[in-house]
Image (cartoon, rainbow, N blue to C red; front, side, top):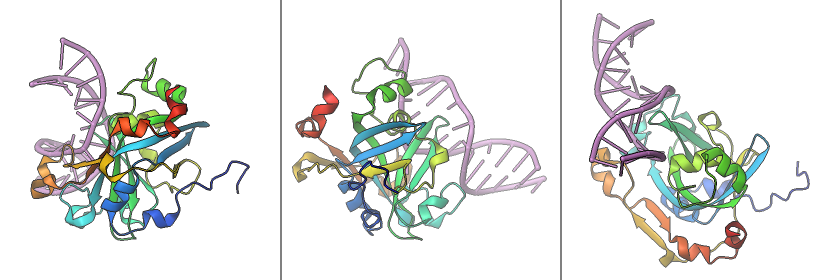
Length: 213
DNA sequence: CGAATGATATACT
DNA sequence: GTATATCATTCGA
């Protein structure tokens, strides 16, 4: 099972199956989203997330209990990926949370490079690291090599997973605000379900020393 | 600011 | 089965 590489920091299933998706979205900040695709290992520190709170949330694909082939993974128990294509181009990566039948999910919107930077640059067609490398859900997914075929993949496997690198985020370094691009969600559009870490503060953390070179 | 882009959901025949 | 409106975005002026 464990082939020498220590997987002890991988988040346990219990992290995802908690009932409060907003809490999970907040806790995901500072965690490392990892992927091993085509044999290439890439890791990203999560700095921005959005919570989508199940059938009662008009901004969610599962609003009103809509269950379709695409949204099926959201209805499973937490701890798997939900990836879908948006605007015909962008593969958006979400973490499914809560228990089976409760379609809650967290969209990962942005991050900072931690490992496999050359591979991320290659996937993004960039020559050097800049602010836009992992800014935005479409860009982040692309840098990690995540595509819709990974929807439904377990986060306890060896393709996509999330690690705890013991980065602490103090409460005042987190900014909450309304979600992006969800104007159609009426009253739910104003909910403060978007969480952003102040990048400069996070950069002071030791873990990023390696990433900044 | 505005165009590009294609899968998906929904409402028809 | 076929059609059309919609979309949790990005990039380049």
